[in-house]
Every structure is written in structure tokens, then in C-alpha cells.
Length: 126
Image 1 (cartoon, helix red, strand yellow):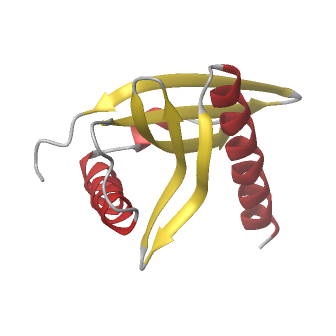
Image 2 (cartoon, helix red, strand yellow; image 1 turned 180 degrees about the vertical axis):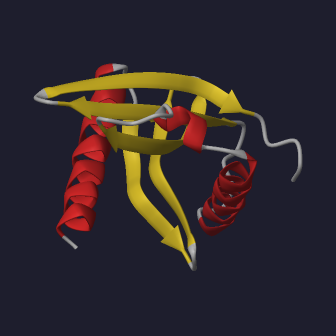
């Protein structure tokens, strides 16, 4: 139970760091933890190049796989489905391009590391 609370707390902190990172890169954060049924998008952001759907993965050391590697095909499909719902619920996106990004956050002792993987995948299976 305590370990689960610790992971949740780390996940929230990771998403906070990811959102701040995106802001420093010029993104406008439109939504955080946007939900539609059982689907969720961690961060929806707007940038000059288009609309970004961002999955944030956070891990606390020790870990044996990098956080970004945890965003496999099944997760990509769910995020893509959520993005389609988001676009429909918001009346489309006009001429904006849609991008799917990943941000990994790792905590090791008192140090946090944020890595950004823009355009991490293209949803070719929609």
C-alpha cells in the first residue's frame, strides 16, 4: 500500500515536471489528465507546429527498463483512440497537425531527469 502511494506521488510529480518542461519549450498546456471513459491523455499541449498528445512515464530507481520503453503498441493505440475522442469533443483541430510525444521522468535519490521524445509515434493503425 505504501509503495503504491509512493508510485502515485512520483507519477504526479513526474507529470508536474513534464508540464513545466513543455512550458519552457513554448508549449501551452491545454489539458492535464484528460479523460474520456476508460481512456486518458496525460498532457494535451499546443505548440506552433500543432497539437501534442503527451504520455508521461515516471520511474523511481532502481529500474531495469527506461520509462519510454513502457509505451508500447497497446498503449499507443489507447492514446490514439483518446486523441480521436478529444478532437471530436473539441470540434476538430482545423489545419493543426497532431503529434504523439513521450516524456520520461526518472527519480534517483534527490535527482530528477526529464527526457522528451517528440513525435514518438505515428498512429498508422487508426
